[in-house]
Amino acid sequence: MKLGPKLVLIFVATAVLPLTAAAVVFLDATRNLGGELVERGRSVLEERIRADIRRTVEETGISVAEDRKRLEDRLRFLAAELADRLSAKAPPKVDLDARFITPANGAGMADGDIDLERFAITLADDAPRDTVKETLGRLAGTAPVSRTIYFRDRGVVAWQHLVLDSGLTVTFPGTKAPAVGDLRESDWYFAAIESNDVVWSGIDTKGPLPLVGPASVVQRADGTIAGVVALRLRVPDLLARALPPSRLPPDAIVYLAATEET
Image (cartoon, helix red, strand yellow):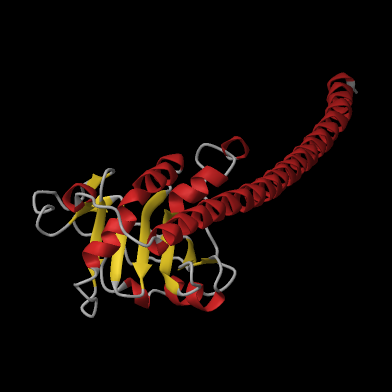
């Protein structure tokens, strides 16, 4: 009886089966290790993203708070300058056409043009016409202050509005169509009058870009309120200035979530 070939087959099977089993165990262990590495990598990435978001929020909060105070200080300075001009006993004689855009001298401007040398004026239906020239004469000298504020925050400040209780609105920079409607009906006008201090408006989404900003009362020397001055700021540019770009990936998208209804 010849057992040679059978023994060889038995020996081969005996050798191959353990190797196969070991390979299966190795592949299973490798698969488990790969899954653990993937999960560990995901956890590390999530933690890193959380840390970046946390630092971004903290740095943005600090930047927004500093920006807010800086803009409020500039608005207070502008309000004080306007109050001094409106309290002057006799307005200086100025060329109003050189300082203010009116429907007559602004007819040649395109709708989107702005003028950094002149103010624009809007009169409400109930505004007294007989005192307009005198008031504008008092305000003409505030152009350097308005220009300084505009250029220091250029790209963020869209408009500066002085809304007098008489119904006269003076806007910088000058434009052909500075205001829509009576700005005395704006939320920030009422809030500033009631608080007698600097207040911030809700986000206005009526125009092409959302606007927000501080407003302050303007008081004459005798304590009476002449009106309200406001800075209208472009929300996207305000946030872009506040967000630290080094903390955000190139394709990051930032969303602004209001903590209360505005």
